[in-house]
Amino acid sequence: MSTVVCRRVRLTGTVEVALPAEQAFVMFTPSGERTWAQGWDPSFPSPGTDETDPGTVFRTVHRGRESIWTVVRCEVGHSIEYAVATPQERCGLVTVTCEASPNGTKATVSYDLTTLSSEANAELDRFATNYPSFLAHWERSIAEAIRT
Image 1 (tube, rainbow, N blue to C red):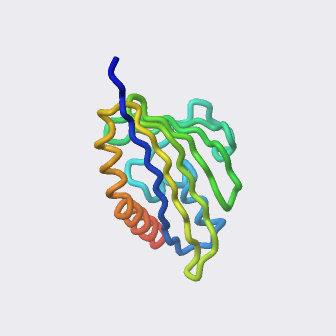
Image 2: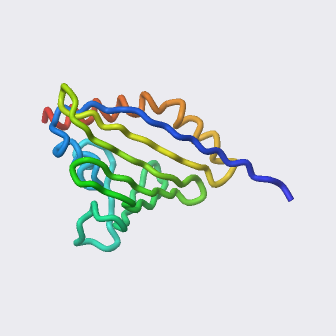
Image 3: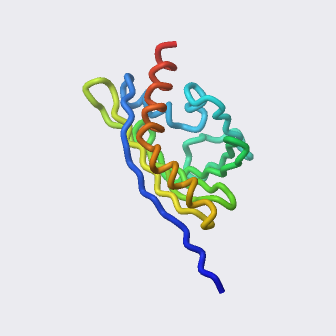
């Protein structure tokens, strides 16, 4: 029997948001990301509930891949944590914590991801390598959304 070697990465970085923490926090909620993340369009199988309520499930499609998200923990205005699974590829946790900074808010964004197959390792490695530019893109996109 062959052994599947899957990879796990833990990544953390920050995004500066020129809004007070309570307003910046909204940018990282499922629907709030629509204002700045091109193509982000969460769908909720059970609509009508508070989308930041732990246990809330939603789906996204990015580059033809569906991911299933569950809100794990939320302190409204401060932090939110999601469990995310992209079938056949990877699963993990995504956490965003907002705190006041001199220019508004510093959002700390952490990903803890594990691949589900050795074939998915290369894509996860690319994500990890590009994580700083990924967050820089978020910061620029959020700043543009705030300006417009």
